[in-house]
Amino acid sequence: MTRNTASEFIDAVEEHVNRVAGSCSHEKGPLLADGLDLETGAPLVWKGHLLSNLACQQNVLRTLEALGTLTGENRYHQQANRWIGYALEKLSDSASDLFYWGGHTSYDLLTDKPVLGNHEMKCVYPHYAYLYRMDADSTSQFIKAFWHTHIWDWSSLLFNRHGNYESWEEKWQTKFTGGPLPIVENSALSFVNTGSDLILSGVMLHALAGDETPLRWAQHLLSRYDDIRHPETGLAGYQFNHRQPCRVRASFKPPFDQREDLNEATVVTNGVIRVRYGRAAVTWLNAAEALAEKKAKPFRDLVTADLKALVEHCYNWDDYCFYPAINDGTRLYPENTNEGVGYCSPAKLRKVPAEGLMFLSYARAFKVTGMELFRQMAFHLAEGMGWGNLQSAVDFESHTSPQSTEAWANAGQNDACALFGLLELYTAIGEKVLLQSATSLGRHLQRRYQVNGLMVSGERSGQTNIDSALPLALLHLEAASQGDRTELPAFYPNNTYFDPKVVIYHQANKKKSKGRQ
Image (tube, rainbow, N blue to C red; front, side, top):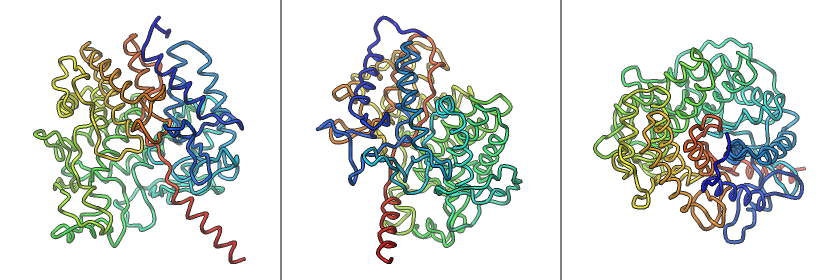
């Protein structure tokens, strides 16, 4: 793949990656700071720590690889190689083989030490192909460690989203027996955000190393989320264990507070819709395309069943919105719960309007499966976002781009998802008007999110992380314009965040322990 003589999108992305490298590099090595103060141009510092979290920089990595591939300029690959080769050595914990990254652990560029909480991955979706290419042993050991430090019971695959940086004993050969669901267990948290990350890691270790074992466990874990599906509606929730007494049911007003079938495993909130039916759905479809046909089928089948059930029981064609529900199809609304009580606030029961993430989910599902329902849904969601009929080219100078009501950690990602959704439809259908619409949206988003050469992840003032998905989307747009984007790394609607509460808790406990000595 070679670069055209002139490309506005490549030029913009080159400017972006140069700004990231110039503003976020550190003298102690090629690790990058996570974010910038847009007023001063200085890297962000939290409680005296200059944080570098590789889990919050995977779009940067995919962008560098795509830029090198699209332009044919090896310097971008060399830049990524230096960075990732150093990172895999620096960020690997010798006791556990886990990396210092994720929701509750990061790395401090000032002290050259980890800021340690526990290991947590929630919709991170790392670029495993690149990590493996740089260090196959380290990446393979990390994936094994990820499974072994998070799985509590291999026979049922009950797990927790938190793992510890401790040594572990290999249990790949344990027998999986499954068992009835949901499991009642008050400590485990079998959230699909972490579950989808575990599943992806198992699939990719198989795809990269040829090992059948991690794929087998990935398929077992996928089956746990399939098995919690309601037998009549096909709707499924966020996890396959729940607590007693039920912290979700405690939130509800009568008569829902008396329903024994309402719990964490059966309620489909707006967060469940966006994660299981949005982020995880796209991820599992990506995983399916990394597998041979027979091995890919369970992943396609689960997503197909999920998205069909969501249309049938949660979508209103009249107002272009998805509504929360119990998995038997009973619709739920904010007025059904109490504020400040239990685990399901009224905000979790707000409807999900037509938006970029769900548009991408259905567009990608149509591209992978060819199902007409999914094409209809993608076109209908586009109409709900104010785009009109996609059979005609959309001029985004006179349309507003989609805005999510969710507080995205990476706010602009929803718009990038919308652009990727248009590209999925163009790949599937091949109609030039879709590429014309995507080009118009790309130009609109570039102007909207570009600040002094940097593509910000949200607002144009204040602070920004460096992991915007828009640069990767623009490179995919350019590749589509040139005729083929299959050589570029796939997009994953990942979650870019660092939640320091566990770090603070650990630090406070350390201080208490020292005080008692």
